Length: 391
Image 1 (tube, rainbow, N blue to C red):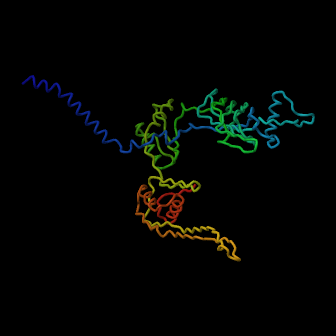
Image 2: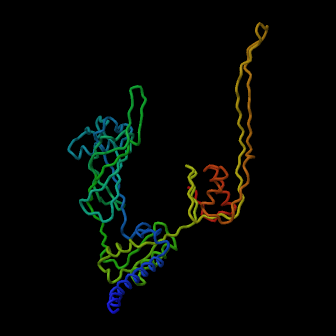
Image 3: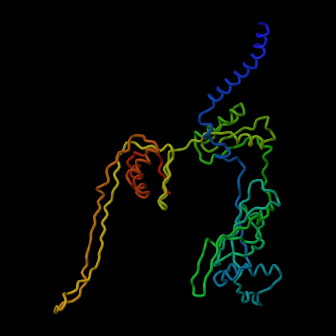
């Protein structure tokens, strides 16, 4: 009997530990927020102060085109740029009066060069450059961009671009004048075609406060971000300044390590809130509805008067061997009128969900164009509990 009790005592502690760990795991599952799996990371819905791109632009020349460049008679800026470039290289093409001599190459095109300078780019870093024709060049395929300074909004040169232009389209024409064009051959790209020459001065290590900018400003979302940050840092370090900005005080433990602070914060998950909104693009007939769109009780009827007239001319000939008869054309007209009588009045109940709203409108058998008119009419009647935005 004593040995049996000893065996039970030996296995009692591991069993209690296993039972305790199981209860803690179940409690953790029960306490986990229901929307944690549907939440978004802060890095996906917001940007941090100072971490931003900068736009660069420049003007340059593309050479080496196969007769598809600018016509210098129609593009004087190309002619002046070509003359200036040759003069800088020691080639004089001006006469005694200073006028440019006869110059009519067909393999040169003036282009605008654009690039995006990523944040914290260092000298010597390669970035992509986009090329777009300015004159009447027909194709930039096979051309080479000459050295082009790229300036920022402050007028300073931050990068220099040069390289082979790659286009995603082409154009071809025959001797008879017929031609075919695919894509946009007058726009191209140079992968890693620009080198950063100037850095943007911005130091994060000594920052005492950090601002988080929401991509979709919202009061509720900004407050949720502040609450998530304070819960993680264990103090009142973050507070929303406005619907689009949350200010975070750098804790003492992160002084001099702001990068580490942002790395930890951007992984926190927050459930973003959004306004009830209906976005309509009348050009393409696209309709996008938010999850919280609701409609009060309203009756909807959709129909239109359609009149279709079809004329089928028929030839009437006289009887055989008749005297004085002539062959005439007799019009046969068929008129069809559709007043939409087969369509009924539909009632949309109070505060339906988005799925019920779509199913109810689809049951009327209407297309996107008519649906746009219906939504605008519902909004005018005050029954659409959402913001209607027309692009």
